[in-house]
Length: 318
Image 1 (cartoon, helix red, strand yellow):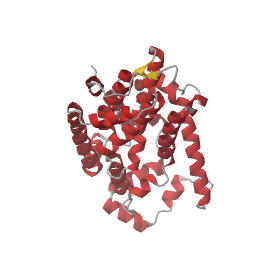
Image 2 (image 1 turned 90 degrees about the vertical axis):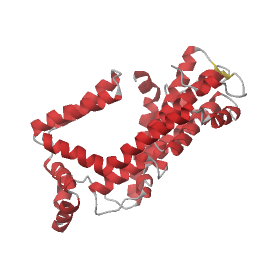
Image 3 (image 1 turned 30 degrees about the horizontal axis):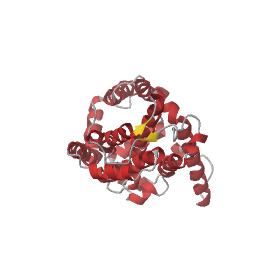
């Protein structure tokens, strides 16, 4: 985790800054007010008939709005700190998420914002409203992706990637495109990571001559591709489980407006900037101007060959 943060930290901050600038420019161009808004005042201005409709359509939305209006204790941020701390310690993802749920529940009891029964109701409502799409889709595509990986279903694509890679940077760039392709086909970021991740890992390790230090930097870039393309490129595909989940959640909490795919991607500058910049910086070599983000290139590293991919490239190493 520490090495990943050091490798992509500066680039990530630059993406955030550029996205914030684009959002500000867009907001000014749309004539939106530049004054800071008060959530409490905004909620107080909601018409009474809207409250009645929300109470009938989505009672959970009323609970959330009341919590925003009344505020929650500052110590409710502790669960987030716990998750980040465990992640830096290298704990498994499920342990991190479970620790946040448990700590948030315990602190919520103290803040009197939740009870065991209300937690059960929230879990039931969340799974039945939004989870019925996302959870079932995730289980299906992860299983489907694993089967495709065992069958070497992506072998023709992987061979095409290697044959059309002129140098190491081009290979890494194609790895990024392969991640986007996998995300579009599998419609789930975890399925993309577990299916395409081993392919781009073995494509690089089996076909690039490099020192251990340089190979480690290439592994970091591949890991960045898997995560960044898995999360951010997901917003580009209307059938992706991320988009389905976001739209279901949004339409559940805000039933007075029907959200569509264009509402997800239209002003999602962070996704656009992250995906575009990562690919362009990799293929052009401009990543050398970003501290700690440069990857080695020829003659420091080089491709072994441009022939067929050996079978080991398409099999996950234990």
